[in-house]
Each structure stands twice: as C-alpha cells, then as structure tokens.
Amino acid sequence: MVTVRAPATSANLGSGFDVFGVALDRPADIVHVERADRTTIEVTGVGSQYIPTDPDRNVVGAVAEALDAPAHIRIDKGVRPSSGLGSSAASSAAAAVALNELYDRGLSREELVPVAAEGEAVVSGEAHADNVAPALLGGFTVATDEGVTTVDADIPLVACLPEIAVSTRDARRVVPSDASIEDMVHTVGRAATLAVGMCRRDPDLVGAGMHDRVVTPARAELINGYHAVREAALDAGASGVTVSGAGPSVLGVCQAADRTRVAGAMLEAFDEADVAARAYKTRVGRGAEVF
Ligand code: HSE
Image 1 (cartoon, rainbow, N blue to C red):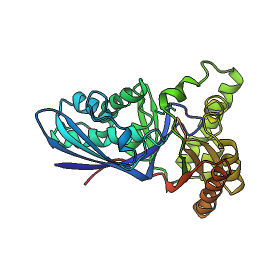
Image 2: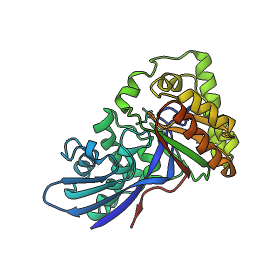
Image 3: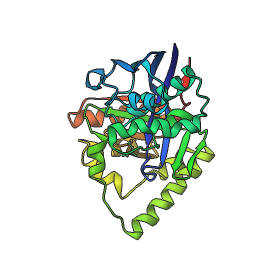
Image 4: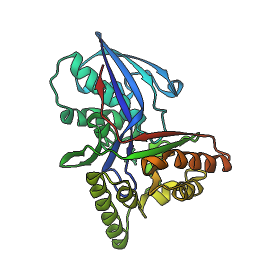
C-alpha cells in the first residue's frame, strides 16, 4: 500500500486567473492505494457524502485510467469539496503520486501535472493545472501552455471558508468573455507585482499584486458577505484579499504577526452577514508527500 498527503491549494490569486497557484500548508487530503484488478473508490472525511465513488465520475478514477494503474483507492478528505481550496486537485495529485509509486511508473512530479489535471476535467469540464501544479510541486506555481514554473515562497495566508457551496462550473459561467485593454494592462501589472513579491518573499508586494478588475468582481457576487469580509481583512492588516480559486473561500495575505487578527476579522464579517465560516491560518507550503 502507498499513502500520500496532498495539500489544499489556492488558484488565481486574483490577477493570475487560470495561471497562478499556491500550495497551502493546511488542510490536506490523504489518499491510500492498493493494487487491484479494477479501480474501486472509498471516500471518508469532510464532505465525503457529496463525492461519487463511481470511478467514471470521481477525479481519482480519471487519474488511475490515465496511468493505467487500477487500484483500490481510499480518500480521506480534509479539503471540503466546492470550497475554492482545490479539493479535487488535492485528491487528484495525491492519487497521481501514489499510483505512480505503486506501479513504479517513474514519472516526475512535473510529468504528473497533466495526469492529475485529467482529474480536474471530470469536475470542471476543463483540465486546469493551476491547482494540481502546486498540489504536486508545492510553493507558488505559474502554469502556462509552456509548462509550470515554481518558486519556493514562504508567505503567511488566511483562507476563510464560508458555508456556501460554489461549483467551479457555475463560477466559470460568470467569468466575462472579454476585457478592455485598460483592464488587461492593470492585470498584467498586478500579476507581475505578485510574482516579484513571491520571489522576494514579501507579503506586502504579493498582496498589492492580488488585485483584479475582471474575474474577481464577477465571482464576488456569488459569495454572500464578500465585500465586507474583504474590507474587514484589509482593515485588520491584510495587504491583499481575493476570492480563492472559484470560491467561495476568501484568501488574505498578511504579515505573520497579523494572521490571527485578520482571521478573526474575516470570521466576524461573515458572521455579521449571517454566514457560518471557518478560517485556516496557513502559509505557502509543500507539495504532495509520500508517507
Ligand atoms: N482557475 C480555476 C478557476 C480554478 O478559477 O476557475 C478552479 O479550478
């Protein structure tokens, strides 16, 4: 048997829609795999009741198929589905690493990115790499059609998860189909600022680079309380706040000393909007690990 832990991730970071991602040091999924004649899936943990165990409808079934690696796959969910924290990517990445090891396929972590992205296609209809790349490789990742670039950044974060479900499919429907040249220039400037901030391990620059005028405003409307939560986090010392992935989680970046205050402010603002929520005080972390 092989056991792998793969972390939650946050994609986009505002200005890097479908390109940027970070691994979070918590929460995480744990996946156990054992050789079998055909793939079967068992799911336990947070939100497991919403996850199909049919291999044709579960992300890890697509990964097993792509690696030609039938197995009994047990997923212990620590990352809630439809949270914007890369729940399906955590399972896909963990399964890809575990099955690669179990069947001795010899693929590198970089080579496993498109394999794990096959799992993403099962849930969102498109094979995005912006969550699976950091789940596999760790750190801050830039996923483009040329491949994935990584930076081992150490940046404090708060991920605040409200009890609202937003599916990636729904959140993609509200993304505008075009943007003005002014908005494009703004986004490129912010994305470049964020990337420099990650390289310099500077939370203030990363936060300044998160701002986005195209995708985030449309998605914010799907998250009850988003604007108040964002304002509260900024007032509490966050240098940047945005929608995590497709939402509904809200991601704040701040100095380590401000993390508790930022988390408290976000929770209080969601509470005032009558939305129950939990906050993860986290940081940019490592990729999938074999136990
Ligand atoms: N970049 C994707 C999105 C992440 O925001 O829709 C979710 O797969």
